[in-house]
Length: 415
Ligand SMILES: Cc1cc2nc3c(=O)[nH]c(=O)nc-3n(C[C@H](O)[C@H](O)[C@H](O)COP(=O)(O)OP(=O)(O)OC[C@H]3O[C@@H](n4cnc5c(N)ncnc54)[C@H](O)[C@@H]3O)c2cc1C
Figure (tube, rainbow, N blue to C red):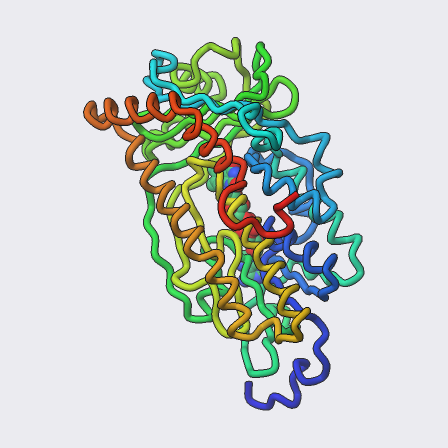
């Protein structure tokens, strides 16, 4: 900044938080912060009309109970509830194509814990619209859509961003919620570690003859996991991770050919299946920011940690960032601290970096351990699954983990 006196930063602190990225974690933070009395400006590169659509884009999320509590706490759950399918049980199987479940299966039933269903399946479109509607309803959220942040600058008193349109916005704290290849992180000089898995997730929804009973299934297949996750009605969401080469072959098939390719892995336990929309692909990889903070800047969600969807934890981890950051910011404000100050941001990083890095590396290990047909590994993991399944305390531990109830829970996730 050449002449700070001409910058809006010094003309009055118009916004407390500048949030770059209006995907999912950005809006969650905007709403939580606005409810807590902070002023927020949130910017997304995509026009709002492109994000506020109920056209099914194929993606659904397994939202842990802790995430549901956060959504309830920030007032958006009521708009989502009717579209949310409770996950009552999870069955995990070392799948063999065409052979159905292996004898060693892990079965997690929510009745083993007191808190209720361990999670809810919610389609991306419903979550997105609920977030956008909630942001529209808050006076202290300014939304800028269809514009891209191209530069950011920091000085002692504040931070500012410049948009492609030439607009400049100043605030106290900059939040990078701009996804896996976060420009906010890059511009702050934060490096990333990560690698590709050579796998692609094929995502779609299927209708089926028999009810799913609220049961989520995870079959570990040699090329990658296949998740069959219950949606409202007689529908399920499919996340089918395959080698990138095979995924391309399967995607090139017409719908009938695709279903034929899916059936040996899917099995027949839900009767006849049919596609209820388009199919989508997502290349899979791990990406971790080496720091979650910089001067007057914090990263949340995929901008901080992008992980394998094997355990359905990516968004849950992002929402936990949101809840933890809210605790840190509200406490800082109550003590009269600068919310963009280094000690405040260090508290956020200390809370979240170790947890999310461990989670991302655990998903990496699971994926490597299960995405192969090595007979020794297969025998070892089948025995391991049998042992976990046979021990009630271990089983309950897994259920609580899936529900997001372990570790230090931020206030918004305490229910
Ligand atoms: C196949 C698959 C299945 C998954 N299933 C689950 C699941 O079951 N449960 C779960 O918890 N998680 C799941 N995840 C993970 C989840 O999808 C992600 O963690 C989540 O979508 C990340 O949201 P985000 O808001 O952090 O980032 P994004 O959704 O990537 O949003 C980033 C936003 O930033 C904007 N942006 C980027 N750069 C700029 C810029 N310079 N200026 C302005 N705007 C910018 C983009 O337009 C975008 O809207 C899954 C992921 C995949 C791939």
